[in-house]
Length: 346
Ligand code: SAH
Image (cartoon, rainbow, N blue to C red; front, side):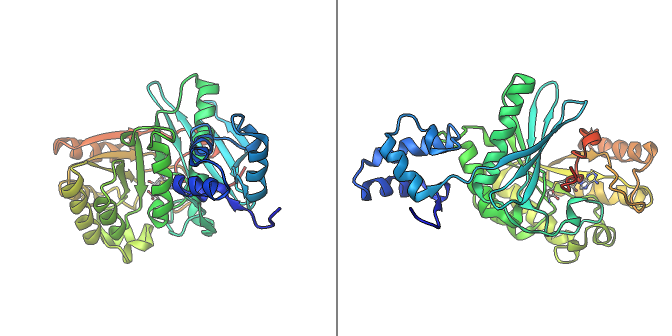
């Protein structure tokens, strides 16, 4: 028995096949185990019923499966479900299931806490503790898929990386997780149904374009004026709008895929005509659509949802310029599951 057993899901399929060959078994056994891990999401070696008892014991002696555990689950009266998920080292992240008439979306976390410092976001108040591993991201999706089948009688249809953390600051692991979620020897979901949301890290947006990723990109913009954006999203000082714009142009050039902008309108912060004009101008750089998100208060007097008139002014100006705009009502507010409310409160 080894003390420091390795997480078996850190191994690639090739490495698993090699492991079996080195231990006098067939490479094919690696495929079987891989299937148990990534298609059937086995929690224990015991579950692998087409593997002999001796082989299961051998796996047990060498590896662990660091599966996440849903610690607490809360259900909102609008059907939203929030999971507080315990990781193998005891840390907690949250993920959310958001059902609508036509789809069920999983909102998953990519980091424990967040390294960014958006002033309006509850998650930003938590220190970034660590990046999530690919399997920890994958497991959140599986847990939500199970809940979707259980409570809504249908499988998960979409995934958004809009939970805790900045996915582009944990790029490699996010990509590995998406690989497992989309590949046919994993969950076989279409990448077109996956959206990665970023506060806007220009270098990483360029990298994603170079890597020819097939999922969608959303950018949390909130202001197209540097001075305003830096005030509410201080890292904008390091990654100013000009750099972001150039990176987004590069993304579109390489992928031909529209970008979504996430945008909250706050009273006295970005609700003036000048803010609207700047945003409309920004929207014209690259084909895009806009999601106006309702503000979810986080016990802070500084930020307040703007008036309906201000929202209407935004919508009118965008539509006049033929930019598609959706207004997203909050979901799961009663259980602190809405955008920007994930802060391990439950
Ligand atoms: N770091 C990534 C992923 C987090 S997504 C990103 O910034 O895109 C979370 C989304 O909710 C972002 O669009 C964020 O700007 C938004 N958000 C954060 N706090 C919010 C709040 N209190 N109310 C509404 N939306 C909020």
